[in-house]
Image (cartoon, rainbow, N blue to C red; front, side):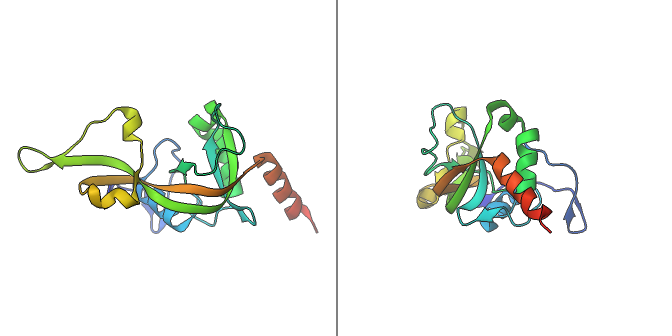
Length: 179
């Protein structure tokens, strides 16, 4: 799998700048998804016996038990940055966020751009409608798709429990306040 590359703002080994919620950096997204790290601070995400904390965009046609098997390109989060995400991330603010605890976030595939060999022998991107362009390529089909430039890693969420983010944050605050 070929991976898209782009520059990062770094000071030494530290990333700099504020989170740009809409613009996911390909290598940071990949690192956080592969290692199950918080997508903002690249530290350990929130994890309990119910699993890792993921956020998803609220969808009207989903009931609380229908998140099993959900595909996501959004890495897990620590509690601090989950709170920031629901307050600052545009699509989560507009549509609403659902907090999910996930026991088994399985690697599924990638999102990217399919290429074909052009008339001059060079790769050229294949144009799709916007929905098809966001459809992940499962890893099991990667050998059938030799010219694919990946930009986001995708996980399939298994063992999903819908949780209340405010309750998680309150409980964490109560634990810290104990003497």
